Length: 170
Image (cartoon, rainbow, N blue to C red; front, side, top):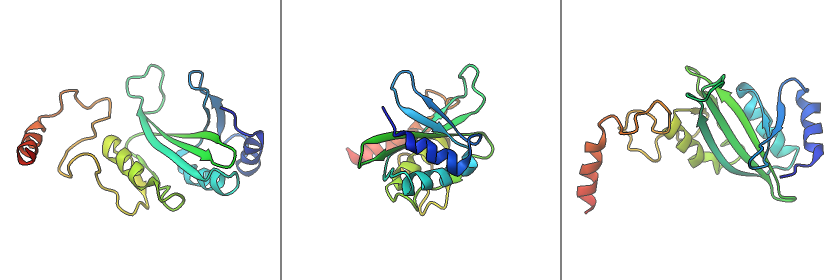
């Protein structure tokens, strides 16, 4: 994937060269910028308003708990697209417990609503300023975050709740 060089020139002009880094994924070829979690909203806003990344394609997270050499617990990943020229850029920031909170992208892209709720539900990352941050995939009573690496593969005994739901539907 190629991204217009002007994007990185604009980023350097606005944020300096020390605050962020650029890399390319060897497997997918995606270009990514790694930014500080405290400033992720500022970067997203700049990329939308000044660089034309008008579409938020995805928000997800990665738990690096058992990754050898990982310095951070979670990676939060935004995939942006400039629909005018089909540029695709991955914006990534890192988070560690106990502070798993970043500003919501909802003021920029209303479509981030359900994506942020999914990341909240599955990983426990909070999005400050989100209009309705509650579980979206698991029941509200569910305890834990199932996509965290320390969540047991067989669950924590909550399956009895799902049997009741299956009987009601059947």
